[in-house]
Length: 428
Ligand code: NDP
Ligand code: HSE
Image (cartoon, rainbow, N blue to C red):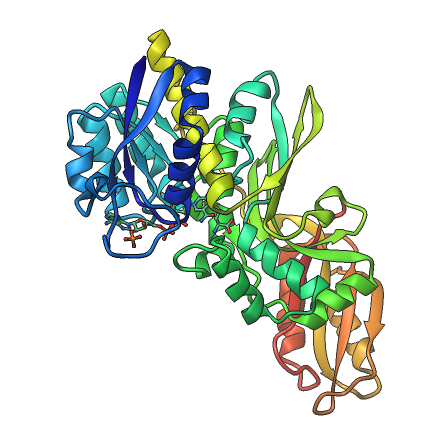
């Protein structure tokens, strides 16, 4: 039987998942793809670390470079993360004639154009199923299953860690710090969890998904990003009173004026299909011109779900090699125009902290009205913390720019204490 010799870079959460799947299902997978998937070398930083799996010592090295240069290997699987040295290692692997599989969305979103161009130049394949949506086979589904469609929009929850934190805050009333530490223990978080919490990881994934479905390259720098670290438990409760859930949503749309792409805490009606996506689960709701709405749902992070996506790429590679085929380039690399979000319109949630005195609501509504922002709902709470009460307004649809300018003016008033919380509301 044919063999696909694999060099694995990294034996952390995802690397262990890949090792464990190949180790436990070797014979079954070999039957499926007619090729034995063989891990021949593994690179780690620290050889004496305790791990989730226990490969033979002889497979392990600390020299990732020796793996990418090894002429005996067919494929390099990059699972070390980060930009450097991952980028240089992938380039070296491609240049030495190897196909590459990676889960590294940060690297692909920020340097993907260089890497895909180099793969093309070298006549090699660069696969990245695990880089978006963990175990959800979203790359294959959009590239193949939705190929007949023009995708109009993506509404997605694509960061398991932040979704886990928000779910814990809403359901178990666990505080932010504790929820994050639980997500880290479960292996969902990035080495630097700020990437998860500040929305950057979601923006990396949205960059890749949008580039895949909108027929050009969306630059990561053009995606607007706000994370979840400013969300307070009181916001979760107030949103609930109005009938909404707060989720970190990654949204992209293709319009006549360009691409809209933004990641931010968003209020969703409780009846919305994405409102009930909890814990480390991810979901991607797309709208295609032929298929209509289509929803993908599954575990978005963790060792085995992500390992499952990496192994699916290895199986594709093995089958292609056996048949002497090549996958076409998955992405168009011409740059797409992305609109500035401040011109976009939405309803908004505004949470002020104001002094409890007559006339406050009138002053705030006058400033909003002056910017043509009209109010649809109000809650004012009695509980005073240091003489200050929360005042929560929902607006009708208005341009974000007008809302932010009004809020800046209100925050300068002596009645306003602290920075106002502004969240986007997505109704459909
Ligand atoms: P981990 O931090 O758990 O593992 C990283 C591994 O890479 C470790 O085994 C580390 O070695 C090794 N490593 C780091 N630098 C080097 C180097 N220079 N040379 C050799 N080995 C090195 O990360 P994850 O497994 O969580 O993530 C890996 C990639 O997968 C990242 O790109 C991440 O964004 C992505 N990803 C992660 C998911 C998840 O759920 N965790 C889901 C989807 C994608 P050592 O163990 O000795 O320190
Ligand atoms: N840190 C990422 C997350 C891993 O929490 O979604 C999966 O890409």
